[in-house]
Image (cartoon, rainbow, N blue to C red):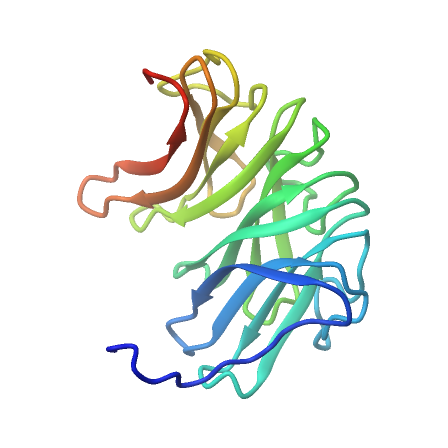
Length: 238
């Protein structure tokens, strides 16, 4: 892949504005899936989608295409009555489901019942969700405290199947039991680990100094199981 040939490209949108922030490939089918945010009320949605219509002023969305991008195989809105966005996406091989993460403002997202955090606590809060490969069902948990939280990245632990997500918080987040349980000031990065079903929050930690931090990428070391994150800071020490 020397990048000398553009094999395929496609649009995905309605009559207003869309952004695509996340992409993943389903290895078993080769389908290409994207996620992001839409302002359109006429976004193309496939039959049986978990959410067939826009619910607020800006909604998240997820869509999948054949490997050639010739066919839209599935597409859904994903939002509540406020503003939602999908920032990150991964494929869960054990569940055979797509995993997405992002943030939401008000209202209730699809699929929260019975999961680790069923209600929001602040004016903006992170979430992580899994979808079946037809985008017909979703499981969702919120991940946030009482102020502003966003989930920017997501990863699957290849050994346990646990789902990890990370982002930033301007306050604190539930379930803190890890390396840093108290904010040192400003905006902090945070990392959370959930069971694959999203029914249980297993662990959570902050990472931050006296000023502002955010986490923008996450990975799991398949040899050691260590969680590796990267991001930005204004603090002189972490």
